[in-house]
Image (cartoon, rainbow, N blue to C red):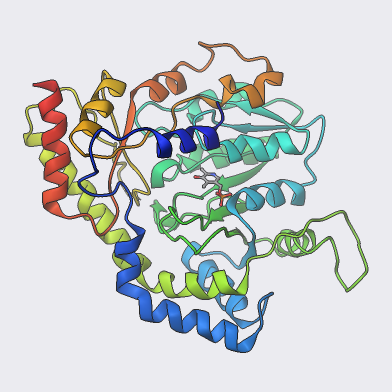
Length: 388
Ligand SMILES: *Cc1c(COP(=O)(O)O)cnc(C)c1O
């Protein structure tokens, strides 16, 4: 089953009981910003300027400031951001790009889509991120880039990754789809390597009214090339320098995202507060020996796009919670190296044991900014009830 199919089954699965509250509550967020969003959308409609224009330019500048980079180039989705970043490096057939098998399909998918081989490196069990210890032996003469993922909102351990990459002359493309606003030793997500890729899919910490993405970079040559590639490879109207694609961030999306960006810091702080509240609740709960809460890393800011615990008997627990009206999700139930889409790589079960173990043990709990203390208490009580 692919990830989309998994999402769809999750949606249509029979619920035993009406949820007490949603797993993810975009309506609660919209209620706070309705007037601002409506004004922004109206502004774009009145201008009838839907492609590029001032909203896109302003948003790109604002995200460059958040990521601490010189350039930011909007595009149509986070998946396109990854694809464009690889295209900017001229990665193609015969090349290899290193990435973890425990991530959303788009990370390895963008690599394989270009005829390039995704070379998987297993994750660290504590952070769920690419294990730098296992990285060096995966580097070959064909390696062109390393694509670490800042999974669930925690930036991957970039210092050893970037130094290995530099030593071997390969690029780092940071999949920052889940980590906007996160920090690693004082540096912001999206600014860790030569290129960072963001997604504005509605469930991300900064989510648009549909699809959207963006690439950050400090390198003026890469910025130039990304601008060319996302606009049909066209430096001037009807002149095509390279084979590109049509992947732009809509002005409407940029206008909505600019409104939301003004609230991002307050929403991120609320996510972190909720994560701390879960930690305290679990520490006091009778279920504490069964639950492994997310690891925090010194001098790193986790922004909790997802709050993912590890538990034994995960599927039974999830069903128990669903019966109690408590919604949870699994990110990710199947490792990419065992997905039919990547069967051509010839991997077998057991090759990436930490990823396979994570797939069997992870459970995402509601963590959105508007989540209330009593709702979190209800989630923890539901888990304690299962293990009692
Ligand atoms: C969401 C996501 C993407 C893809 O972003 P889209 O905007 O949905 O195309 C890529 N990588 C990771 C880790 C993601 O979570």
